[in-house]
Structure formats: structure tokens, C-alpha cells
Image 1 (cartoon, one colour):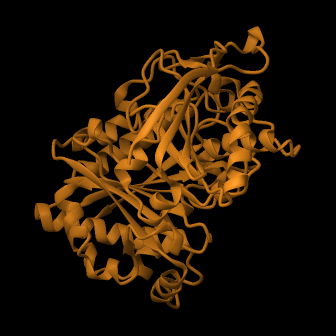
Image 2: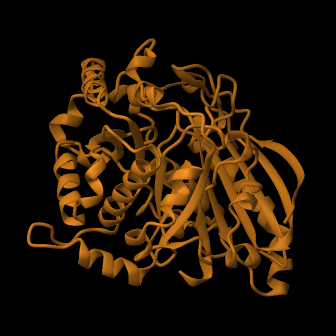
Length: 447
């Protein structure tokens, strides 16, 4: 299955950015997080041949024009990474790649091929660091044989977390539909979380990840919990102390348990595994920050999991998850606001670092559920599938134990994308408790 690039151009904002906004300061939390390019792919089917021909004539011009109008509102996303302190809003725009696939979209939806999905990206930059001079946003629109289109987007984590990413995509779709529902993005993060003039590496997420660098070849697996499995998993995760567990809670607990078991079987762990759980803090602040606040409003919860984690019950794991989540409350978030934020950050990083001195390995489990990805409609319907992107050949030797959760189309299930060493993934695929509830890379048409 081949994908051919037809053209490349830069889509500039429909109006220039005012001079006083030309330099967009990164916030303290933007500086704290790694500036990886985050990928997302939205697949849209067009079933009738005549409709496909009709829509193909205006889909690309519509995407380009509406992106131009959207970038005028989301002006830092039309800029380039300046340094660890700012984005230069130079109005040079977002890279836009037009491509054509020589196979029907339904073939990919029926039998998802993770390597082929990576070909739909504008460049092989997913999960790599955005450097000074790199564009903040890159887009590819791929037209498939027999109709259908994929819109893939790479965005630098320096400018956006998952919530911000979704706000941008929804704003772009609203512009395309002329629905009048375009959000008013809020770029006040740097005035809330006062940036450091030079955040040292030991005060960033890199300080947490660097001790666990590995050289083993990594891979990607996709585990699906459909609505039926979710009902059974929630029942297993419920007891007198844990009531009404959410989709994210039960899948996080099971994936945490299963991943630690896989790491233990391969490496014969003698020390705990450090689990990192990123959390959106917008609604945990008092008063809460607006949902359309752009930038990174994320803090990381951490927990140590012993090699005996495999013996823990799901209700116990969920109860523990709720306990540590409750600690990220209004007063905690307020500590990052204002001039005292850097001291708060350093103290929090030091605590994590001290607890992780006894850790043998780490895994990050993050949720992209409930951000409305399946509501993103550019004018030809909602997505048939919303996908992550696996590790490409360029970064398969990159150390990464990472689990990302996404909604299924029904919003009643969860997709868990797992990035780990191939040895660990082989063990994970044979975990009986995991396979009781999850299927490995099934057809998207069945969920």
C-alpha cells in the first residue's frame, strides 16, 4: 500500500499577526514538558462514487482556506519554534502536504496496518523533538482510491497538550463548516505559569525520563476494549469501595498491571516500576481555567509499582489512582501560578526524582479520551476512525514505554496504543487477563 506526495506548500494565516503578538512566550509548564511532535490521524469515508468525485473537487481547497482562517486565530501555531523560551509568530504558516493513496480507505479500516498509517504523516517526525526553527504544525491530506480522505496533523507539544490540540482541530472544522462555533482560543498560559528564563534540564520532564534510556528496538501494538468488554471490565473493577469506575480508570488500571507484568517477565525486576500519569489540570484549578486555554495545562502524577503488582486487584489499583489524583487539587495547581511557580516546580520534580531513585524502569499512561475527536466534522461527516501513529523506522530504536488511550467511535470503548520494546510487547500480547477483555488490532469497522 503506497502513498504518493502530490504537492507541498505552507498555509499562511488569512491575516497578519499584530506586531505585539509576534513573540509568543512559552509558559513554565510548556518548558517543563518535552517538545515532541504529537500525531493524530482522522479518517473520513465517502461511500458513493458520485459523491466522492463531487467532494474531491472541493475538499482540499476547503481544508486549505479554513486552515488559513483558523491559523489567524491560533496564531502561534502558524509560527516556528524559537528556542526553549518562545515561539516566533512569523506567519509563515503550517506545512500542508497533499498526497494520494493507491488503495481504498476501507482496506485500511478493515485491516489497520500501523506502518501504512505512518505514511500518512506530512513527515516522519512523530514522537521526535521539535528543534529551533521547526514549524509548530504540519498537516497532510491524503485522498484514497474510491473516495475517502485522511487528515493527519503533527503539532509540537511545546505549543499544545491534547486538550489544546483538540481545541485547534475543532476550531478548524468549525471554520470549514462556517458553523459559527469556532472557539476563541486563550493564550494566557505564560501570564499564569510564569516562564523561567532558562529552565535547566533537571527541572524538566527529561530529568524523569533520562535515567531510563534504553537501546532495545521498540514497537507498537493496538489493543481494543469494545463496549461489551468494557461492561465486563467495569464489573470486575467494582466493589464496595470502588463504585462507578470510568472507562479510563479501568483500562488504565489493567494496562498498568499488564505492562508491569510484561516488564517483570522480561527483565526479572528487582525494583519497582515508576508509572507516570499525566493529568489535565484545567478543571482542577479553583476557579477552573477555560477549556479553550491553549498550551500545556498538564501535571504528572507518579506512582511506584512493585513487581508483585500483577497480584493486585483492579479495584485496589483504581482506588490508589483516585487517591493520587485527588492530591492534584485547587491549592496544588495554584502553587504553579505566579512568581512562586518555579519553586513549586523544582520542589515537585525533586520529590519525583527522589522517589524514582529506587525505580528500575518506567512507563507513561496517558488518556486522550473524552476530547471529542469523533465530533470533528469538516463538512463531509464525522470521522470513521481516529488513530494514533506507531513508531516509524526512524525512531524504532528510541526508548519508550508509553500507553495512550483513545475513544472508539461509539465512545463506549477504548483503544490502547502501546509503545514498548518488542520483547515486552510479545509478552504483553500473551497476557491472559488482558486478552480476556482486549483484542489485538481488530478491524475498525467492528468497534
